[in-house]
Length: 154
Ligand code: ADP
Image 1: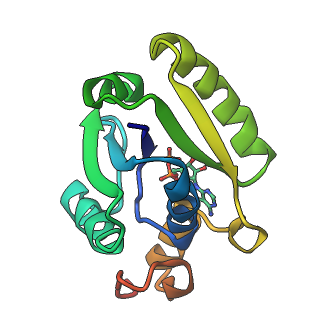
Image 2: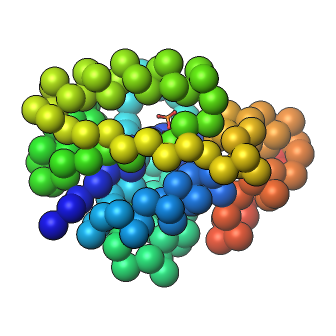
């Protein structure tokens, strides 16, 4: 059984995230889309709201399960028996950051492998950060959000 974790803040989930999960689906038996909770970090949307959106978005994908964790991603993977991490790469700065994290997870996670999927060109400019800026500025972020999610402009 090949189990992968797709970790992130998903604050909020975007169509870029959904694309990565769809493309990773044929590669694994189970994908756990998991919100990493960092008590030092300020989020725009509460955990419960972000989880609810993930559940709605992936309701039609029987391979996907939604969960959350605190502390180290590698420990969460061990706890649920996942041997793979999925991450998306949009650009060189994603690569630089992800490379280090992946190498650390190899060690801390005892061989935990990170599988990287390169963003589709049409999605490489999309980030949760940009979506949050649009929402905070009172704009319409719907072009970047899965159809299941409705966020009223602030
Ligand atoms: P984090 O809080 O760890 O930055 P995010 O929720 O922003 O997590 O993203 C989780 C993962 O999804 C990361 O690997 C990120 O690179 C990837 N990702 C985010 N947006 C996109 C996108 N538009 N295309 C491809 N991958 C993406």
